[in-house]
Length: 301
Image 1 (cartoon, rainbow, N blue to C red):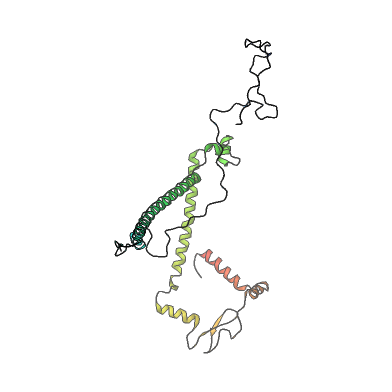
Image 2: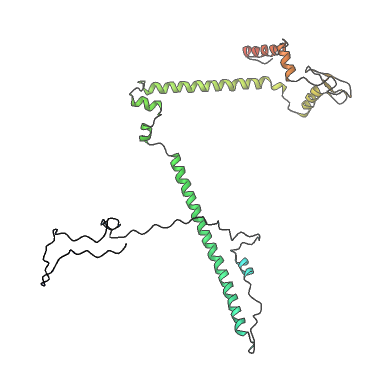
């Protein structure tokens, strides 16, 4: 705060007794001798406790500290073995002789080496303890944040949110508009019970149909190696007389040495679609008739 200028006294003459000859026109204290251009022209009250300037913003950012305990060695740095290998004591301490000129310097070097080794041992232990404590605090903070976030995400909506949201469920809208159905709960329970029984009946029908198919096709199951060999020979033939696969899909016995590509490449999707468009769908009609017959008779053809 700049210094104040002394108060300007009014001009008055004295008659020798110390009393002014002319009395001031105002009983208030005289103003300061400051012009309107001064910042102190208007008196602004100051707080009893002054406000300190805010902490300056530090520009830039600190680099990410490296992990000093990460090493290529299999021995961790915080272990006693690693510290002992890093701060080895000499096998024999060479003491300077009584007539040595640099005795004080050598002793100083020995004390400095001991201080360095001691500082390294204590520093590694303290840094590792601080690192463990920091990691635990960070992990605890992350777990607590995740737990709080999970709790908020899984929490049910509040009643005030449900009743005041823009899109609410039909049940809440019917309750607010007094349009809930007047059907007793007994009828609701009966309807749900009937629907459950119908669903079980459909599942039972599907299981019964599958069991019937399994029973009717049981005679065609392959249960031993002889039947497997017969099925393979029936489908692919034997080494002396293999089966020949034709383009139209049927097979026939072929002589030894015949190839599956002897009658040309197999037909593709475009050829099959062309056959269906040309009226050659008799095989599909037979399959449909077979399925209809199986459904009506309850058997297998």
